[in-house]
Length: 297
Image (tube, rainbow, N blue to C red; front, side):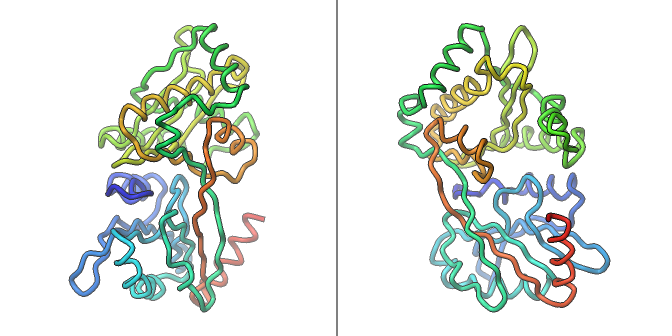
C-alpha cells in the first residue's frame, strides 16, 4: 500500500500491535457491496463491557484508509456507520491525505493535529538545509569518530532510558517491544540504526519503511553523549540512506512537543496537518470518555 500512512495498516504491524499491546482486532480489508475500498487497522480495548477503539501506542494513524480519493468520497459515511454500530467510543487519527473531515458531524469532536515530514525535494538536497548548529554537531561527531550501523534488534537499554531518565515508566515492557520490532524486521518493514562510540551503542532510531514512505517510529539515546552530536549524526546518516532508497516522503511522526519538533525542524522538516476525531456513541461511551479525560488530565 504505497500511500501515506500505509505501514500502520500493514498486517504485520497491526498484528504486532494487537499482540503486544493487549488489544483485540485484526487488519481488515474495507469492503462495501462486494467492492474493496481500502484497509482498516481498528484495534479494540474491551473492558467492563465497553468497546473502545482509540489510537493505540505507537500508531501514528488509526482508522480507515481508502485506496483513492474517489472511494473515500463515495463510501466514507457508509464505513463510519459500521464503526458507530460496533463501538461505544471512537478516537481516530486520519492520514494527512484524508479529505472527508467535514462529513463528521452529529456529536463528533474534531482536532487538528500536526506531523513533521521531510519531502522528496528536501531528501534530494539532503544536508543543504540543515541548521548551522546541526552541521557543527555533525562535524563534532565526525571528530569523535561516531559511526552509524544497522542494529539487529531493539537497543532495549536506550529505549528504556528515554523514559526512566525523566522519571517515567516505559509504556510497555522493553521485551514486548523487542519482539514486536523483531517481527517487523523479519517482515522487512523496520530498520534500526544505532550511533556507536567505542563499540557502545549511545543512540538509536527505528525507521518503518513501506512503499515510497518512511516513518521515524521509535528512538532512544544516552544523554551523556548528546554533546558529541550523536543524534544529529544519526539523523543525517538515516536521511542519506533513505535518499538512496528513493523514499518520496519521510514522516518524522508527530510534532506536538516543542523540543522534539525543533530538533526535527533543524533538518528541514516541515509541518503537515492531519485530522483526529472522537465520539462517544452511547452512554457507555460517554462514561469511558469521562474516565479517559480524568486519567489524562
